[in-house]
Image 1 (cartoon, rainbow, N blue to C red):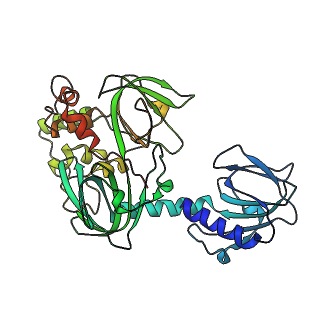
Image 2 (cartoon, rainbow, N blue to C red; image 1 turned 90 degrees about the vertical axis):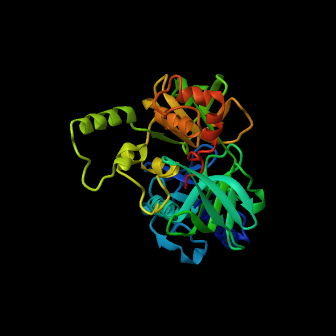
Image 3 (spheres, rainbow, N blue to C red; image 1 turned 135 degrees about the vertical axis):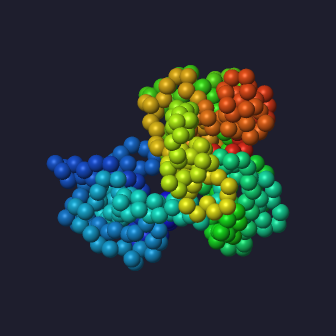
Length: 391
């Protein structure tokens, strides 16, 4: 989305002003100043700048994804709204707006939502197990265990890669299949088989991610940082959150399963159409069963589960709470920038420990968590593909 917007703006600016260099800024409308007839625009990096609207200011709107600026439609300056993405072109030597080209925040939101839904419907995600010729084999961790999916690429497949310390899906850089390695996380979309385990890819986005887990030690709302005791080495780990970081919260599965056990003990039957397997799994409890279109995948994968979980806030976190966080592999071992953080993650850690042979999933004491600390569990945690690539 961002690439389309910038490409369109650059095209328009170059084509329209080749003979007359002008000052332009790409950013987001952050405020209106009615008393001075100014529009305040915040660039992607830097502080907001106010520009003067005059009787000569020209305003146009273009749809997200459009690069042919001949399709731009004239609008009134009063139709520009807070949150709109804009290219502001300024009269030389002044702060007067000569022209403002707008991509509506509402249109962008609709486009992003449709694109995200398409990635879910026609996509697959997992960790690279192997690569051979035009095929990439992925390991997909589901609530029922591990499965494999095959991504077939063609000469028309688009490849993009996350940069180190980046958290934005939209900022992934153009790449190629040769740069994909075992252990990388991949998300692909295209023509998908009935069972969801084969995709002929139109788009592939990948990156080298790390997954960390630990108990919260301290929370700093001002700097938007959380310190945890890293399960892998018992050392402090600082997790930074940006506006693009996502937080999700697992439900209190122990209490919910305990309640279900009590119901079943009293002879209560499952709801009509529900299976015991679906009801007893975290995926089934999260919001009522498997994701549509998952076919024969034998259980909801981790990213599908995350899509259904409610958003969490930094102020909801508590010291002592177990979290799992994904990030790109950065320069520091003791600090990461969160792409996805999952709070109240005790049950997920138990599941990973049990599936990796680290212990029973029934307890965090001598079995499950001990297995995580012991060796195989932490490797399995890194291979679960936790929300590194989020459309």
